[in-house]
Length: 182
Picture 1 (spheres, rainbow, N blue to C red):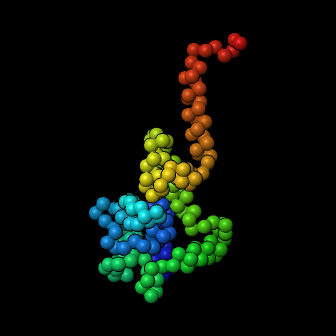
Picture 2: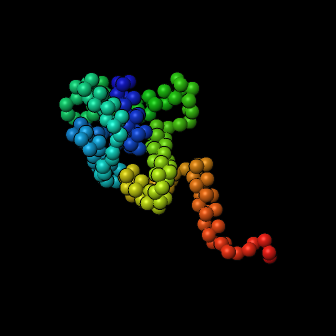
Picture 3: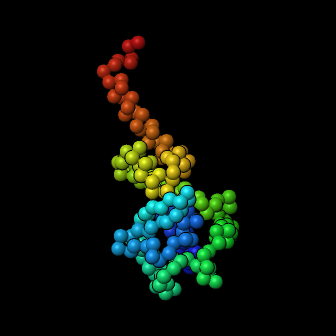
């Protein structure tokens, strides 16, 4: 169970999944050739495709091979049933307490971290902020962009990017205007 939980937590963090989504993943939902997981009938009966990294692929394949999972649920409890969300939350909180980490954190915070990290990485690569937010809202399975905006916390990085953009805009706006001679 503990090894399974470690893979499950990594999947939550690295793919930005909801708890309800990760515990419903079947082996048949995973395409290892394309590094994708088909999330079926999630919140509000939406479905979507999420991608995972090669390192996540290695973890998943190792887990599947170790436990000889051929079909059905990827993550199961000791009775071969779907893992209970509440049990998963309790285990995550126990890890936080045992590790002397932020005891106010929640397992769902991993989804928030994913969203912010993905947003910042795409901005650093030069993508337009408006394009990034549309991509993320679709990727995360949100119905409205405002739901994704809720996940994007106003970090120092975001604040600095806004200030940089404002400085560039301001310089162009006042180009040719002598502000010293008023």
